[in-house]
Image (cartoon, rainbow, N blue to C red; front, side, top):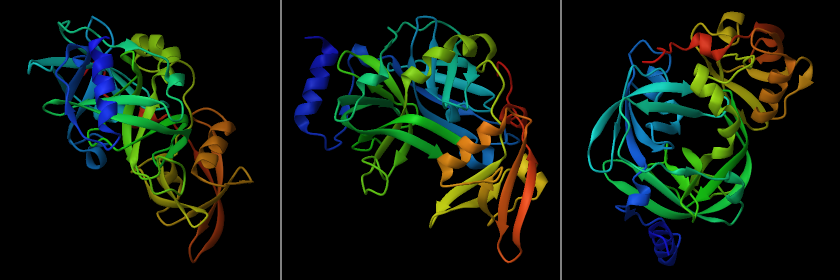
Length: 326
């Protein structure tokens, strides 16, 4: 029995209650701590903070680390801390808004065995997995996959086949979802309250399937982003409220704000097609055309009535203040 299989079996015997266990065995050394410094003028500084910490996973011997993108978005300084306490400077390689992944690379190759990339289809409902994170000391818990379904985020993000697990792991940002063969099958993104399904009370985490990385990895390494035309971005933070899609806020000097969309507005339809929920809204917007397309929205202004607003969309990468190569 391999060391990792022993860890996996031992954790499963504890029950899936979320008890954290120190993971000091070498198969888990590929999971590292990430610290990122973000300048105050960054677009995401107020929302995500100027100092960010989470986990990442070495996936090759050159020092390439995969993590969740919000940890390193717009960062101008990044470091990686190994399990032995060694701190290594790193540079941002890529950020992919569509999947949520981020890549960075240490300036020198680490003396760490990288984690093998697995197949996230094995993270099917009821599958047993490990979640491994790093926040000062490496931690691992046994989890169970509770559902595979779309996840829509208020930041114009839609993942069609997200992985939801229980129990919740507090250090979820960039944590590794690992199968019993020690292969990486997902990267931690969020805490959720409905891991078992929509409208359930079931705290857990959402993971981005590693299979989302495979078809875009070459593009990310070559150009820092996926190839092709970007999706249209509006700069709308939304929320589902009593069957309606509510505008919570608009991004400063973003397309929607410039077009007159305001906090408190209700989005009724896109190009004349009614909007059912957040995921439906994104799909309809993206179906209109690539970044730069004009997106017609029917918007209900409370107290002022309905208005059709045409928004000239943009590529979100052009709005962000990303420092290439940081």
